[in-house]
Structure formats: C-alpha cells, structure tokens
Length: 161
Image 1: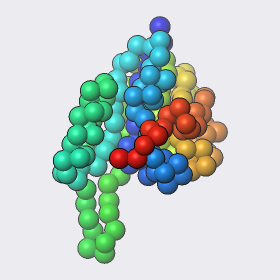
Image 2 (image 1 turned 45 degrees about the vertical axis):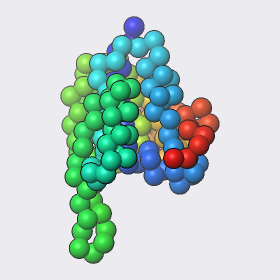
Image 3 (image 1 turned 120 degrees about the vertical axis):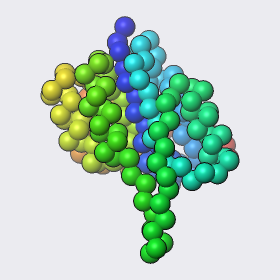
Image 4 (image 1 turned 180 degrees about the vertical axis):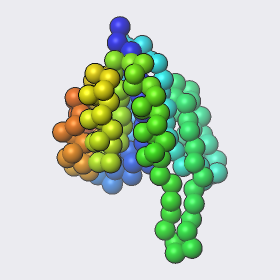
C-alpha cells in the first residue's frame, strides 16, 4: 500500500473554488479520492484563524475527516490589506514528510510551490499530485506535478453555505 501525505492550502482552495465554480470544495470527496487504497502518514490543512464560530465549525469538520488543522492569526494591515500566508509552513512540512511517503498530495494553485515539487520529486523520488482549479492554477505548478487533478464537479459541494 502506498504511503501518502496530504497538504491543503485552505485559503487558496477556498478562494479559487469560490471564484471559478461559485461553490465550496468538498473535503470529504477530496479525502476519499486522494487517500483511496493508501496509508495516510500525515494530513494537514493550513488555514487562517479569524476566530468566528462558523470557521471553528469548519475546522472541526476538517479534523473529523482526518486533517490536523494548523492556524495562523488573521492580520489586518492599516492600509486595509490582509496577511495570512502559509507558504513557508507548508514547504517545511512537505520537506519533512515527503521522505516518509510515496505520494505527496498538495491542494493549491499557488505557483510558488513549483520549486518545492521539483525538489521533492528529484530528491526523494516521490510522486506529487496537485489538486487545483485548472483555470486558476499556475501552469508551472501543473507542469511540475506528477499528476494534476482539476477541481471539478466530483470535488464540489453543490449547494453554497
């Protein structure tokens, strides 16, 4: 049985799915697809903590599915922009767990991860599956993946919350 590690850039998946499909990502369907007939070594969802109740419920749902949820505080800048980037944290965890697995699954469309994917494929010989909204996923990320899975109907919740 293949060993798999799963990493989800929650903000990226939320916003790209919402923007392109106008609905939510189906984490249960994703989990079933990404982990089918595989031993899960680690699964982490990276999110921003705004402290609201609906978000806490969502985080508990993720935990119930099998994810460890890592949170960073939401930072509102004085100019009105916001900060909440998990790229370095995701990269560190991927580097740590890739060597303990056969397959790395990354749910994100962020092109900054293409260097990471190329490195772990070369250094650890792992297969990397990237899940993202095809039209909003960096081409460099798609090219660097062993397999790209487009977020389409089977990975979407049909009703918006």
